[in-house]
Each structure stands twice: as C-alpha cells, then as structure tokens.
Image (cartoon, rainbow, N blue to C red; front, side, top):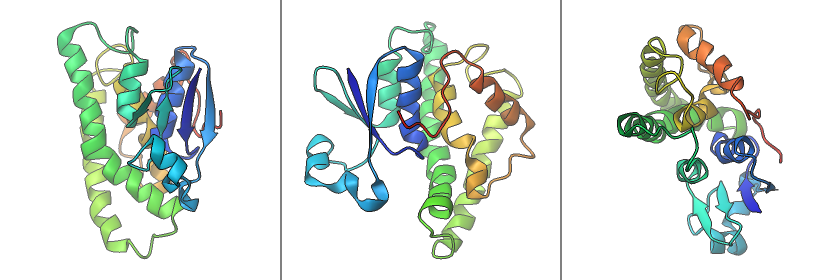
Length: 202
C-alpha cells in the first residue's frame, strides 16, 4: 500500500491524494502539521531531507517528493497522460507553469493570508505576488477560452495540478470574477471520474 504524508489544507498534498483515489490505489494518509514543525523532525527528514510535504512512500518503501513528480508516477500508463507526444509535452508545459508561474504566487499568498497569519507582515510582498498571480490566471483564462481542459478535450494531470490552488485562490484574496472560462473549468474538473474534494483527510 502507498503511504502519503501530507497536510490537509495543502493543494500540493491534495494532488497525489486525488490521483491515488482516481486510479483506485489503496493508500494511507499521515497528517503532518507543518505549522508545528512536524516536517522538520529527524524522523521525517530521514524520509525527505528537503523537509516538505507531500511525501509519497511507495509500497516497496521507496519515496518520492515533489507533488508533480508524484502525479507523473501515479498517472503512468493512464489516460491522464496523453499518448500523443506533442499533447504530452503540452501537459508538461502546464506542470512547469504551475510550479514556476502559478503556485509561488497564488498558493504562497493564500498560505500567508489564511494559514500563517502574515497578511500584515508580508503586505508589500503580497501586493507584488498578487499581480503575478493574476497574470497566471490570465494565461489560464485565454487557454480555457479555447478548450474545455488545459490540454484539449480531455482532462490530464495538468488540470489536477492547476486545480489545486486555483479553486482556493479566493482564500488568498484573489477574485475569479473576471475569469469566467477558469470558473467553468473548475466546475468541469469536479465532475471528472474519481474526483475527491480538498481538503483531503484520508
């Protein structure tokens, strides 16, 4: 059985939980309270020296860090990864976009505002990151205005990766009012087979 170490409010932790559920793979969830430093204990650091969740432990004991690496591993051999080489590359493009242009802004602002109580302390950084977050939403809006999912007609791992923090963007002060295509896409993702809502508690 797989073991997933995660923090329930985290979109990055929801991603592999969602994929495990969608693939029908049994797993156990171990909650890690990052605000209490539980990802920095000697025991956890022995599993993941980077001291972060999620962490996926495979049935044979090997471990994987980084949520999108987990998605790629768990999606191997399924329709979640396009068989066409170009469409597969487009999916990778969105996975890189999520980690470089989306998550550092939308997810980080949400964490500061909703979970870490740093809205005032990080006020100027929040202003700067919010602008970048809206830029990312604009890229998604244009893409989703042309197709129902990020890589064409079918959901892929890209949709799981981007759904994670887009649907909770308002928790960080982002308004989705000006992004109708994004809002329609969020609804479509919740309708895909195997979908489980966030937060995930196992």
